[in-house]
Structure formats: C-alpha cells, structure tokens
Image 1 (spheres, rainbow, N blue to C red):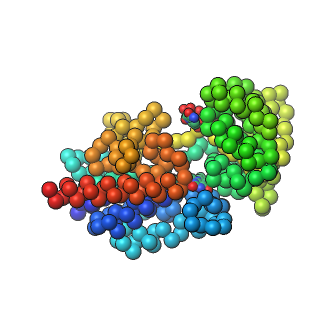
Image 2: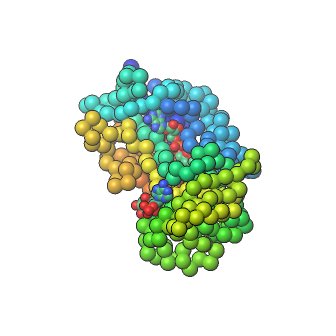
Image 3: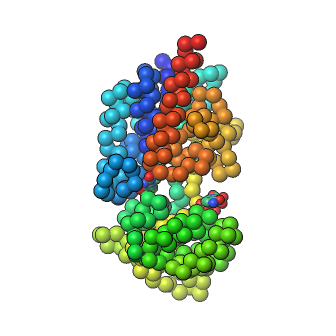
Amino acid sequence: MILDCAIIGGGPAGLTAGLYTTRGGLENVVMFEKGMPGGQITLSSEIENYPGVSGEISGMDLMMPWPAQCQKFGLKHEMVEVKRVSKDGNIFKIHKEDGSVSQAHSVIICTGSSPRRAGFAGEDELFGKGVSTCATCDGFFYKGKEVAVIGGGDTALEEALYLAKICSKVYLVHRRDTFRSAPNTVKRIKNTQNIELVLNSTPEEVYGDNMGVTGLHVKTGNGEIRDIKVLGVFVFVGNDVNNQTLIQEDGSFLCDVNKNGEVIVDIKMKTSLKGLYAAGDMRLSAPKQVVSAAGDGAVAALEAITYVDEKLNS
Ligand code: FAD
Ligand code: NAP
C-alpha cells in the first residue's frame, strides 16, 4: 500500500499535521515517531504560553490529549525510528530502523531540533527543573530572581538580554573572554547594568534540591571554583537540527538545507522537493515554540492534501 502521507516525528508539528491531513480527507496517513508522541515539550515541567491554557501545566499534560484527537480522525501511529527518507520516481520511501520500508505519495518531516548540552555535572538531572534551553519559555518563572546564562554566541547573548528585562540579575558565563556574537549585541550586553560577565569560566556543576536548581559552580580562569546562587541556568551552546533522515546514501540532502542544517521552506512549508514538506523546529528560522510548530504542521498538511489530491486525481 502507498500511504497518502507519511509524517515523520510526533511532536506538536507532526501531531497537528496528523490532525489536519486526516480530518482534511487523506485516508492512509501514518505518523512515524520513535518514542512517545508529544515531542520535546514533554521535557518541560511548566508551559504557560500556549494560547488557551490558563495557568501553568506541564508539557506532558499539554500534549497528552493530542494523539487521541488525531486517532479519532484516522491517524495511524508507528512507534519506530526512521533512518532515511528517499524518493524513487514520484514515490517517497521511508526506511525504518527495523529494516522495513513504507511508501508514500507525500511526506511531512517534523523531526524537530535538539539544543546541545554543555556537559557539566547535574545538567541532565536538573533539566526542566531549573536548567533550561528556552528563555522565551521559562524566563518568566524567574521574574525578579537571579539566573545564569551559559554560552558566548548570538543565542546566549540575545537570550541574556531578554532575561535581563525579566530577572533581577543575569550572570553570563562564557568560557573565553571574546564572544562569537555580533559586535552590536556585545555592546548592548556590556551596557546592560544587571548583566554580570563571568568570563574565562566554565560551568562545573549545577546543584539543587527537590524544588529545583539552587546554584551553579563555575571554574574561573585561575582555577578557583566560584559559587553562584541562581535559581535558573539557561544553556545556549548551539543547536542541532534533527535532519539526519534527509541525508542520502551518497551524503547529499534530499532537499535544500541552509548552512545551519535548517530545511529551507517557503511560506507554505514546501521544501525544494515536490511532495516534501518540513514543519516545526527543523525548518528555516523557526521561532522554536509549540504554537508555531503546530501552525507549521497545519500549513504543511493543507498543502499535502492539495498535492496528493492533484496527483491522484489528475
Ligand atoms: P519536537 O517537539 O522536537 O518533536 C520532534 C519529534 O520527532 C520528537 O518526538 C522526536 O522523538 C521525533 N523524531 C526525531 N527524529 C525522529 C526519527 N528519526 N524517527 C522518528 N521520530 C523522530 N515552547 C513553547 O512554546 N513554550 C514553552 O514553554 C517551551 N518550553 C520548552 C522547554 C523545554 C525544556 C524545551 C526543550 C523546549 C521548550 N519549548 C517551548 C520548545 C518546544 O518544545 C518546541 O519548539 C516544539 O516542541 C517543537 O515542536 P516540533 O514538533 O517541531 O519538534
Ligand atoms: P554558536 O554560535 O555555536 O555559539 C555557541 C557558544 O557556546 C559559543 O560561544 C561556544 O563557546 C559556547 N559553547 C559551546 N560548547 C560549550 C560547552 N560545552 N560549554 C560551554 N560553552 C560552550 O551557537 P548559537 O549562539 O546558538 O548560534 C548558532 C548560529 O545561529 C550562529 O551562526 C549564530 O550567528 C546564529 N544566530 C544568529 C542570530 C542573529 O543573527 N541575530 C541569533 C541567534 C543565532 P566558544 O565561543 O568558545 O566556542
């Protein structure tokens, strides 16, 4: 059987694509998700910027009803890791971890992105409990409190500026004494009174109690350990787009990606390859929010419906 649409990844983008494709009339739609559906937001202990959700709920609670809503309209879910997506003529092939291959007329790829971890002690254990990789998402929880930001690139500096507007103080911890960021951003950082630069310093350990983070140990340039009492630690040491399934046997990408590996799409989430759409965190200039990922999934689904309809009925 050739699927009308294969959705790769079951985060907010993939689940919304699943809802819109099935409810919009496509009949054989399978969402391939390697773990439990829900995506990376299920790692977050609190989300309060998804419209219509008043009060703080966990990411897990937010995502819990999404799969059942899709299944109601006929979305099927295969719990399997997709290794590669290829195209043979005008049929897509989904190569799965177990060696089997599914075929589809269209593909919506929604495999998200993964913020890099810096690798210091306690970072993984306290992730989502004070350690965060998203200032827009979690900054508000530290309103009027002190936080640390790790990193020295554009993201770290821009997010430090954002946090400085909400938090009483931001310690910007960077392992060198020069930044990778744009000079004007560095200037703004230096002119922001409640940002303290902690340079030539690497995070050693984040620690806390059962309520979350209570502090950070950093190793300074002269080898001493400095104890910084903060309730939040924001790690911005780079981001990897999960684009591995698009890499072909010869090393080329199935569609165009930019130098950061983000999939290049137009406003309709169309990639450079006909019938292939990308949605959510993995696409060009994604805002990396649940609401935008869901919106992308809907846009991609509506395009896929039109494409499949024209392909099968013309
Ligand atoms: P993802 O959520 O990353 O989902 C991708 C899915 O694809 C995953 O389920 C993954 O398992 C699956 N997948 C990947 N590769 C494969 C493969 N090869 N085969 C099969 N499946 C695969 N956003 C907000 O709007 N508000 C917040 O408060 C907020 N807080 C956050 C807190 C944390 C700790 C984190 C990490 C993120 C937060 N975000 C928040 C960001 C938000 O989670 C993402 O923007 C959103 O989840 C992106 O959705 P997505 O569907 O594009 O990708
Ligand atoms: P990045 O430029 O790769 O910077 C990562 C930073 O984290 C670097 O300062 C690096 O230190 C530091 N770092 C890496 N690993 C670390 C570790 N294990 N421990 C401590 N520090 C570590 O990543 P980014 O800031 O996310 O930016 C990614 C790309 O997006 C860049 O091209 C950037 O210019 C672009 N971007 C642009 C804008 C904009 O134009 N406004 C905004 C955001 C991002 P070193 O410097 O010592 O290597």
